[in-house]
Length: 564
Image (cartoon, rainbow, N blue to C red):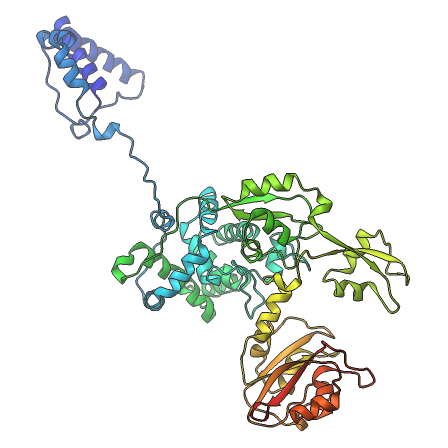
């Protein structure tokens, strides 16, 4: 009870005594009777346990001293406030993991499934270290968004289960991005996807869509968060069918009682296991690497198409770092139709804004004047300059695909060599295809009617491996002219390969090399130098034997390194 309330009771009690206790009691009794007669609510009764300190009936002398003794007044003013009158101080965490830890709310059962997942994570400190490093730029933003929506803070850990906080993650089920959206669900929740941009990889947009989807699932499944999270992984249709099946059998319909696919059955326990490890890391001798509990990024809208290399220069950071913060951009620039926003390190945003304001829209891209040649088409020109036919049409006000030899086109081109944009979709594909996964590599050009399944059977490789080597999912479409790589562990004979494929000599020491054509070289001279056949060189490189080799031209060769 506060000091002001105590003084009020002291004075009120003393005045009652000075005025005559009996008359006061009679009056109170009379009022109480009238109150009951008129059916008014009974007066609030203060119980002894609600009183912080006992109060004695004061005398007139006590009242006088309380009102006139300065020392007594000062001592009362300096008295420590009653705990019931003090608002609890809000704890401000300096470590973002601690902020998340303080808000974890889902019940974590200590069952076999949760314990198994927890034991796995507990053995991999290095994995959790990588998680903290990847999550650092984006986690504060995600936490803030979850708090705004009053959703369980455990959801901040969901990207660990989904993608290990990798915005470039791509699964065998065609799910992409940190939150692992498949194309259909991405479209439902407003994530754009075209040649220039994939909203599934855009951390800001995919976080919005993921929380929208989870909110929808939470309502769909009557407020059961575990079932909603399971449906995020498995789809609401499948989970709904499992619930209906249990209802028909008079079985419980909570997550632990549902017969779900193996992946989904482990999905929720993984999330709960991570939450348990974050709640009590000391019990498992784990450390969650500190992430400052403060914003790490700022979002700036350029409001026009812009070269990513130029944006990086204006922000004074490497191209790779900027592209890593903006993984939604698939090419060397933002999409002409937008979005044009850039996620930047928060300390770089002011300088970027200042330079952006001084750079007109036309100066944010490089342009090349191209003279149309015989045999050119819009698609061929677009491929040459790593752009699209639609963009060339729009820039040059073309209404159709007709172009004329000798005329000029204005074409947007990258500010730097395309290889410098190492996180663009094409360059990530090149890096993936060149990652050694066998003894030698075969380049295969897709024919009309080909499917990944047909190619995998013909080349005697696993379809999932074939897809993985080419940064694809097994169900992804392929198109004629597309180049796929096939890694082989054992050599194969020429007779086992079809006319469209590359023929590799059956020698144990065969290796793939790239040969740069020199002045005076011919197919016969190169074949003789490396003890290989001319027809093999032609097949490996899809060459036209009627055309001469050009100095500087690069050829893929499979040679016996013991003879080189």
